[in-house]
Image 1 (cartoon, rainbow, N blue to C red):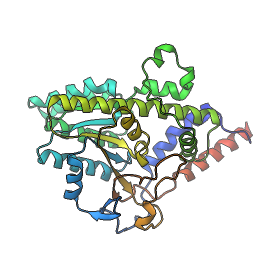
Image 2: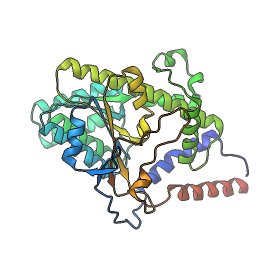
Image 3: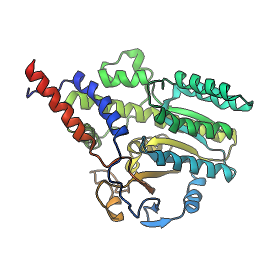
Length: 347
Protein backbone atom coordinates (compact mmCIF):
# COMPACT_ATOMS: atom_id res chain seq x y z
CA UNK A 1 0.00 0.00 0.00
CA UNK A 2 1.62 3.26 -1.11
CA UNK A 3 -0.60 5.64 0.81
CA UNK A 4 0.78 7.50 3.83
CA UNK A 5 -0.04 5.98 7.16
CA UNK A 6 -3.22 7.47 8.60
CA UNK A 7 -3.17 9.80 11.60
CA UNK A 8 -4.84 7.16 13.74
CA UNK A 9 -2.35 4.50 12.70
CA UNK A 10 0.65 6.71 13.34
CA UNK A 11 -0.71 7.81 16.70
CA UNK A 12 -0.90 4.17 17.71
CA UNK A 13 2.69 3.46 16.69
CA UNK A 14 4.39 6.51 18.23
CA UNK A 15 4.06 5.24 21.85
CA UNK A 16 5.52 1.91 20.74
CA UNK A 17 8.43 3.72 19.11
CA UNK A 18 9.02 5.79 22.25
CA UNK A 19 9.04 2.62 24.34
CA UNK A 20 11.54 1.08 21.95
CA UNK A 21 13.77 4.14 22.26
CA UNK A 22 13.62 4.01 26.05
CA UNK A 23 14.38 0.31 26.35
CA UNK A 24 16.74 -0.34 23.44
CA UNK A 25 19.68 -2.55 24.40
CA UNK A 26 23.10 -1.06 24.94
CA UNK A 27 25.35 -1.72 21.97
CA UNK A 28 29.08 -1.09 21.76
CA UNK A 29 29.44 1.57 24.43
CA UNK A 30 32.20 4.02 23.49
CA UNK A 31 34.81 5.17 25.97
CA UNK A 32 34.67 8.81 24.92
CA UNK A 33 36.98 11.27 26.75
CA UNK A 34 34.15 13.84 26.87
CA UNK A 35 32.07 11.64 29.21
CA UNK A 36 31.88 13.30 32.61
CA UNK A 37 33.26 16.61 31.33
CA UNK A 38 31.49 19.93 31.94
CA UNK A 39 31.89 22.68 29.33
CA UNK A 40 31.18 26.41 29.49
CA UNK A 41 29.97 27.02 25.94
CA UNK A 42 30.90 30.71 26.06
CA UNK A 43 34.58 29.81 26.24
CA UNK A 44 34.46 26.19 24.98
CA UNK A 45 36.53 25.43 28.08
CA UNK A 46 36.18 22.66 30.66
CA UNK A 47 35.09 23.66 34.15
CA UNK A 48 34.81 21.84 37.46
CA UNK A 49 31.60 20.77 39.19
CA UNK A 50 32.11 23.35 41.93
CA UNK A 51 32.57 26.08 39.32
CA UNK A 52 29.37 25.02 37.59
CA UNK A 53 27.39 25.19 40.84
CA UNK A 54 28.87 28.61 41.60
CA UNK A 55 27.58 29.80 38.21
CA UNK A 56 24.10 28.43 38.90
CA UNK A 57 23.64 29.44 42.54
CA UNK A 58 22.82 33.10 42.00
CA UNK A 59 20.65 32.52 38.91
CA UNK A 60 16.89 33.10 39.00
CA UNK A 61 15.97 30.07 36.84
CA UNK A 62 18.19 27.04 36.29
CA UNK A 63 17.29 24.44 33.67
CA UNK A 64 18.72 20.97 34.23
CA UNK A 65 17.89 19.73 30.75
CA UNK A 66 17.75 15.97 30.37
CA UNK A 67 17.22 13.04 28.07
CA UNK A 68 14.34 11.47 29.94
CA UNK A 69 15.45 7.83 29.94
CA UNK A 70 19.14 8.32 30.79
CA UNK A 71 19.77 7.41 34.46
CA UNK A 72 23.01 9.42 34.57
CA UNK A 73 21.10 12.59 33.71
CA UNK A 74 18.88 12.18 36.75
CA UNK A 75 21.87 11.37 38.94
CA UNK A 76 23.46 14.65 37.83
CA UNK A 77 20.25 16.56 38.60
CA UNK A 78 20.18 14.94 42.04
CA UNK A 79 23.81 15.89 42.67
CA UNK A 80 23.32 19.53 41.68
CA UNK A 81 20.21 20.00 43.82
CA UNK A 82 21.94 18.27 46.72
CA UNK A 83 24.94 20.58 46.36
CA UNK A 84 22.70 23.65 46.33
CA UNK A 85 21.10 22.43 49.54
CA UNK A 86 24.54 21.83 51.09
CA UNK A 87 25.41 25.46 50.29
CA UNK A 88 22.38 26.69 52.21
CA UNK A 89 19.98 27.22 49.32
CA UNK A 90 16.36 26.12 49.19
CA UNK A 91 15.51 25.92 45.48
CA UNK A 92 11.95 25.42 44.34
CA UNK A 93 11.84 22.57 41.84
CA UNK A 94 9.50 22.39 38.86
CA UNK A 95 8.90 19.25 36.80
CA UNK A 96 7.92 19.05 33.14
CA UNK A 97 6.61 15.52 33.64
CA UNK A 98 3.90 16.66 36.07
CA UNK A 99 1.06 19.06 35.36
CA UNK A 100 0.59 22.26 37.30
CA UNK A 101 -2.75 20.74 38.32
CA UNK A 102 -0.79 17.92 40.00
CA UNK A 103 0.95 20.33 42.37
CA UNK A 104 -1.40 19.73 45.34
CA UNK A 105 -0.59 16.00 45.16
CA UNK A 106 3.13 16.80 45.07
CA UNK A 107 2.84 19.18 48.02
CA UNK A 108 0.90 16.59 50.02
CA UNK A 109 3.81 14.24 49.42
CA UNK A 110 6.28 16.92 50.54
CA UNK A 111 4.32 17.31 53.79
CA UNK A 112 4.39 13.55 54.38
CA UNK A 113 8.04 13.93 55.37
CA UNK A 114 7.16 15.82 58.54
CA UNK A 115 6.63 12.62 60.51
CA UNK A 116 8.43 9.26 60.36
CA UNK A 117 6.76 6.31 58.67
CA UNK A 118 7.27 2.58 58.60
CA UNK A 119 8.52 0.90 55.44
CA UNK A 120 4.98 -0.28 54.71
CA UNK A 121 3.59 3.22 55.16
CA UNK A 122 6.26 4.67 52.85
CA UNK A 123 5.36 2.13 50.18
CA UNK A 124 1.68 3.03 50.52
CA UNK A 125 2.46 6.77 50.24
CA UNK A 126 4.55 6.20 47.12
CA UNK A 127 1.96 4.01 45.42
CA UNK A 128 -0.81 6.47 46.29
CA UNK A 129 1.17 9.37 44.80
CA UNK A 130 1.98 7.39 41.68
CA UNK A 131 -1.72 6.66 41.17
CA UNK A 132 -2.71 10.28 41.77
CA UNK A 133 -0.18 11.43 39.18
CA UNK A 134 -1.40 8.89 36.62
CA UNK A 135 1.92 7.08 36.45
CA UNK A 136 0.67 3.52 36.99
CA UNK A 137 1.32 2.60 33.35
CA UNK A 138 4.81 4.09 33.21
CA UNK A 139 7.73 1.72 33.76
CA UNK A 140 9.08 1.38 37.29
CA UNK A 141 12.44 2.56 35.95
CA UNK A 142 11.07 5.85 34.63
CA UNK A 143 8.98 6.41 37.76
CA UNK A 144 11.98 5.84 40.02
CA UNK A 145 14.04 8.48 38.21
CA UNK A 146 11.57 11.20 39.16
CA UNK A 147 10.47 9.77 42.48
CA UNK A 148 14.11 9.84 43.62
CA UNK A 149 14.18 13.59 42.95
CA UNK A 150 10.86 14.05 44.73
CA UNK A 151 12.20 12.21 47.78
CA UNK A 152 15.31 14.42 47.80
CA UNK A 153 13.06 17.49 47.79
CA UNK A 154 10.78 16.09 50.49
CA UNK A 155 13.63 15.09 52.79
CA UNK A 156 15.08 18.59 52.53
CA UNK A 157 11.76 20.44 52.92
CA UNK A 158 11.78 22.00 49.46
CA UNK A 159 8.79 23.24 47.49
CA UNK A 160 8.00 21.39 44.25
CA UNK A 161 5.50 21.95 41.49
CA UNK A 162 4.27 20.54 38.22
CA UNK A 163 4.71 22.79 35.20
CA UNK A 164 2.81 21.31 32.29
CA UNK A 165 -0.72 21.07 30.96
CA UNK A 166 -2.79 18.10 32.04
CA UNK A 167 -2.27 14.87 30.10
CA UNK A 168 -5.90 14.94 28.99
CA UNK A 169 -5.59 18.44 27.53
CA UNK A 170 -2.31 17.62 25.77
CA UNK A 171 -3.94 14.61 24.16
CA UNK A 172 -6.94 16.67 23.09
CA UNK A 173 -4.72 19.26 21.36
CA UNK A 174 -2.73 16.53 19.59
CA UNK A 175 -5.95 14.92 18.46
CA UNK A 176 -8.02 17.99 17.58
CA UNK A 177 -5.55 20.83 17.11
CA UNK A 178 -5.99 24.17 18.84
CA UNK A 179 -8.73 25.22 16.46
CA UNK A 180 -10.69 22.06 17.21
CA UNK A 181 -10.87 22.57 20.97
CA UNK A 182 -14.05 23.67 22.67
CA UNK A 183 -14.27 27.14 24.20
CA UNK A 184 -14.13 25.57 27.66
CA UNK A 185 -10.84 23.87 26.81
CA UNK A 186 -9.37 26.99 25.24
CA UNK A 187 -10.03 28.89 28.45
CA UNK A 188 -7.63 26.53 30.22
CA UNK A 189 -4.76 27.53 27.92
CA UNK A 190 -2.34 30.42 28.19
CA UNK A 191 -0.54 32.09 25.31
CA UNK A 192 2.52 34.32 25.15
CA UNK A 193 1.51 35.05 21.53
CA UNK A 194 5.08 34.29 20.46
CA UNK A 195 4.72 32.98 16.92
CA UNK A 196 7.28 32.78 14.15
CA UNK A 197 6.89 30.94 10.82
CA UNK A 198 10.65 30.24 10.58
CA UNK A 199 10.67 28.61 13.99
CA UNK A 200 7.46 26.72 13.20
CA UNK A 201 8.95 25.30 10.00
CA UNK A 202 12.08 24.28 11.88
CA UNK A 203 10.13 22.51 14.63
CA UNK A 204 7.75 20.77 12.22
CA UNK A 205 10.75 19.41 10.30
CA UNK A 206 12.24 18.24 13.59
CA UNK A 207 8.99 16.53 14.63
CA UNK A 208 8.95 14.66 11.35
CA UNK A 209 12.59 13.63 11.83
CA UNK A 210 11.91 12.44 15.39
CA UNK A 211 9.04 10.35 14.04
CA UNK A 212 11.38 8.79 11.46
CA UNK A 213 10.02 10.80 8.54
CA UNK A 214 6.44 9.68 9.06
CA UNK A 215 3.40 11.85 9.56
CA UNK A 216 1.22 13.96 7.30
CA UNK A 217 0.84 17.71 7.50
CA UNK A 218 -2.19 17.80 9.78
CA UNK A 219 -0.59 15.54 12.34
CA UNK A 220 2.64 17.57 12.38
CA UNK A 221 0.59 20.77 12.76
CA UNK A 222 -1.20 19.30 15.77
CA UNK A 223 2.09 18.27 17.31
CA UNK A 224 3.30 21.83 16.88
CA UNK A 225 0.09 23.19 18.41
CA UNK A 226 0.68 20.94 21.43
CA UNK A 227 4.31 22.04 21.60
CA UNK A 228 3.36 25.73 21.68
CA UNK A 229 0.60 25.25 24.24
CA UNK A 230 2.86 23.23 26.53
CA UNK A 231 5.77 25.67 26.30
CA UNK A 232 3.51 28.64 26.99
CA UNK A 233 2.00 26.91 30.02
CA UNK A 234 5.38 25.82 31.41
CA UNK A 235 6.82 29.32 30.93
CA UNK A 236 3.89 30.77 32.86
CA UNK A 237 4.35 28.17 35.60
CA UNK A 238 8.06 28.97 35.92
CA UNK A 239 7.43 32.70 36.32
CA UNK A 240 4.78 31.94 38.93
CA UNK A 241 7.23 29.75 40.83
CA UNK A 242 9.81 32.53 40.76
CA UNK A 243 7.30 35.00 42.21
CA UNK A 244 6.44 32.45 44.91
CA UNK A 245 10.12 31.98 45.72
CA UNK A 246 10.68 35.73 45.88
CA UNK A 247 7.68 36.26 48.17
CA UNK A 248 8.69 33.40 50.46
CA UNK A 249 12.09 34.89 51.18
CA UNK A 250 13.77 31.57 50.47
CA UNK A 251 17.21 31.81 48.89
CA UNK A 252 17.67 29.70 45.82
CA UNK A 253 16.74 29.50 42.15
CA UNK A 254 13.79 27.91 40.44
CA UNK A 255 15.28 24.61 39.27
CA UNK A 256 13.52 23.16 36.22
CA UNK A 257 13.64 19.43 35.44
CA UNK A 258 12.85 19.35 31.74
CA UNK A 259 13.68 17.66 28.45
CA UNK A 260 16.43 19.42 26.51
CA UNK A 261 14.18 19.91 23.49
CA UNK A 262 12.25 22.55 25.43
CA UNK A 263 15.38 24.58 26.20
CA UNK A 264 17.79 24.16 23.29
CA UNK A 265 19.20 27.40 21.87
CA UNK A 266 17.22 29.50 24.33
CA UNK A 267 13.96 28.66 22.55
CA UNK A 268 10.90 26.57 23.46
CA UNK A 269 10.37 27.57 27.07
CA UNK A 270 13.35 29.86 27.73
CA UNK A 271 12.34 32.59 25.29
CA UNK A 272 8.78 32.47 26.57
CA UNK A 273 9.92 33.00 30.14
CA UNK A 274 11.97 35.93 28.86
CA UNK A 275 8.88 37.30 27.12
CA UNK A 276 6.90 37.13 30.38
CA UNK A 277 9.68 38.44 32.63
CA UNK A 278 12.68 39.87 30.81
CA UNK A 279 14.53 40.66 34.04
CA UNK A 280 14.92 37.01 35.06
CA UNK A 281 18.41 35.59 34.79
CA UNK A 282 18.15 32.13 33.19
CA UNK A 283 20.90 29.55 32.74
CA UNK A 284 20.62 26.23 30.96
CA UNK A 285 22.72 23.17 31.73
CA UNK A 286 22.17 20.66 28.95
CA UNK A 287 23.06 17.16 30.08
CA UNK A 288 24.16 15.71 26.76
CA UNK A 289 24.62 12.17 25.55
CA UNK A 290 27.70 11.76 23.36
CA UNK A 291 26.89 11.24 19.68
CA UNK A 292 26.63 7.77 18.13
CA UNK A 293 29.72 8.42 16.02
CA UNK A 294 32.88 9.99 17.39
CA UNK A 295 32.64 13.81 17.57
CA UNK A 296 35.11 16.46 18.66
CA UNK A 297 33.96 19.05 21.18
CA UNK A 298 33.72 21.68 18.44
CA UNK A 299 31.04 19.63 16.69
CA UNK A 300 28.71 20.04 19.69
CA UNK A 301 29.10 23.82 19.85
CA UNK A 302 27.73 25.41 16.63
CA UNK A 303 24.65 27.60 17.18
CA UNK A 304 21.34 27.01 15.47
CA UNK A 305 21.25 29.15 12.34
CA UNK A 306 17.67 30.36 11.87
CA UNK A 307 16.74 33.54 10.04
CA UNK A 308 15.78 36.27 12.49
CA UNK A 309 17.19 34.49 15.56
CA UNK A 310 20.37 35.25 17.47
CA UNK A 311 23.28 32.87 16.99
CA UNK A 312 23.50 31.40 20.48
CA UNK A 313 24.90 28.05 21.67
CA UNK A 314 22.60 25.14 22.42
CA UNK A 315 23.00 25.75 26.17
CA UNK A 316 25.11 27.77 28.60
CA UNK A 317 26.80 24.61 29.84
CA UNK A 318 27.16 21.02 28.64
CA UNK A 319 27.68 17.99 30.85
CA UNK A 320 28.50 14.98 28.70
CA UNK A 321 27.34 11.45 29.52
CA UNK A 322 27.31 7.98 28.04
CA UNK A 323 24.43 7.09 25.74
CA UNK A 324 21.59 4.84 26.80
CA UNK A 325 21.87 3.09 23.44
CA UNK A 326 23.78 3.33 20.18
CA UNK A 327 21.00 1.65 18.25
CA UNK A 328 19.08 3.70 15.68
CA UNK A 329 15.49 3.77 17.02
CA UNK A 330 14.12 4.31 13.51
CA UNK A 331 15.46 0.96 12.29
CA UNK A 332 12.97 -0.93 14.46
CA UNK A 333 10.22 1.46 13.44
CA UNK A 334 10.97 0.87 9.75
CA UNK A 335 10.70 -2.88 10.27
CA UNK A 336 7.36 -2.44 12.05
CA UNK A 337 6.08 -0.18 9.29
CA UNK A 338 7.16 -2.55 6.51
CA UNK A 339 5.43 -5.41 8.30
CA UNK A 340 2.25 -3.34 8.57
CA UNK A 341 2.35 -2.60 4.83
CA UNK A 342 2.83 -6.27 4.01
CA UNK A 343 -0.08 -7.24 6.23
CA UNK A 344 -2.32 -4.65 4.57
CA UNK A 345 -1.39 -5.91 1.10
CA UNK A 346 -2.45 -9.39 2.13
CA UNK A 347 -5.82 -8.22 3.43
